[in-house]
Image 1: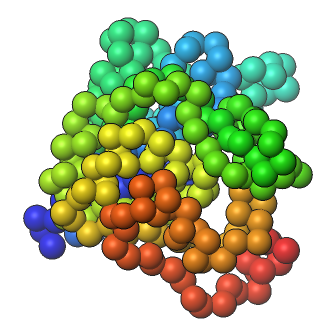
Image 2: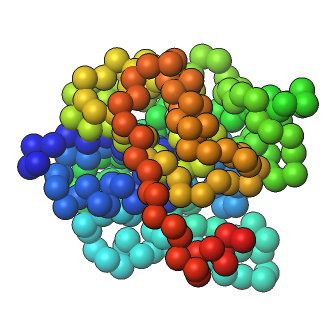
Amino acid sequence: MTGLRAVCVGGGLGAPTIMAGLRRYTEDITGLIAVTDSGRSTGKVRIALDVPAPGDIRSALTVLAEGDPALVRLFSHRFETDKSEELNGMAFGNLFLAALTQQEGSFLRAVEEASRLLRIRGRVLPVTLYNTHLCAKLADGTVVEEEVNVRATGKAPIERIYLKDDDVRATDGSVEAIASADLITLGPGSLFTTVCACLLVPEIARAIADAQGLVVYVANTTTQPGQTDGFNIADHVRVVSDYLGGSGLDVALLNDDPPPDHLRAHYA
């Protein structure tokens, strides 16, 4: 499997976890990472500095990093302070990527420079360079905007998701990475706000649907309140397939082992 070319689509902790596992088999890994997150420190940076969401990019970079361990730890550091609401919980890596974006004049060049500084093995690309937001139409007709509201609990079920900007383009190199990949993984992660959010970039969805490589959806082990309440595995697969245009998905990977007691208690 030395020559395996893998593309991992997603964000959060899901895609980076898959990327970390694949590192044992190949160095040719490309993470295509969601940039529509709007919560916590990522949301603060997006508002203040007008950049695509850096948080999931930061997580993917640190997973593939082979540089100075002190720099890698610093990249993941979150400030703790009771004197500044804006800084409390802020991830240093998010500020670092925003600063590089201002210096380089491009979010993509910022990610490339961060990749060089962290000496990552593989490649990380945002699915798009557009600073767009995720929106959803709910079953009761309500429309919500921004990822943090799309994933909120206590609302009607999600009927469909879409991007606020309808002219979003894929990042240069992303479609080519998919076309040349032997393995393309989707997820795990939040079904609507991470996995399918990436598939809202039309060129990405088309490239995956047309891919010659094996396309694998890595399913979550639980439902997620606010997004997949009442869903079974077939529902998850159906939604992913729908956002791929009805074709392209080859395998759904799921864990059918019962969760251990401590996880049952945690998610109860």
